[in-house]
Amino acid sequence: MNKLIQKLNDFNELVMFKHSIFSLPFIFIAMVVSARGWFGFKLLILGILAALTARNFAMGFNRFMDRDIDALNPRTINRPNVDGRLDATQILIFTILNALGFILVAYFVNDLALALALPILFIIGSYSYFKRFSYLAHIILGISLALAPIAGVVAVSETIPFWAILLSIGVMFW
Image (cartoon, rainbow, N blue to C red; front, side, top):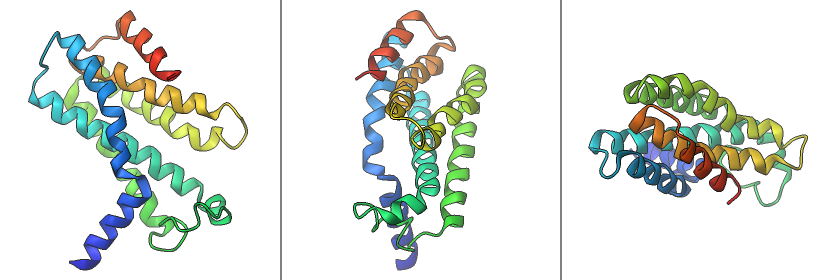
């Protein structure tokens, strides 16, 4: 049991789980505005699961791709992806399971959410490559966070209204 708890703590440290809460307000604000009030417990739970699995995918993929770079950086040398607490296979399985979890959650939300699931995963995963050749990689991070309000509106109304795009642009440059 102690090994399992330690492994969960290692994954928690890998993706900085406590930081996942930062994207939730953008999702839920858009959901409240789109629903003109309470949007229901089902979408609340699905929204939380979508945000967590999407972020876990992105962070897991980033840590998987950066193992070699993190090993050379004194600031990141003690991360679980570098110091041996989690091996590449474990991180890859974690990343794939979160991607599949995100797609499954999108399936239960609605058809548009499901149709957007793979493009969203592609965008949030692309940062890991983009940062290797451009100083503008933070724009990809901004776009990734900007998808949160669009996802919230899609969950409630199965549309992408103009106001949600404007809100997303604001989030992107925040």
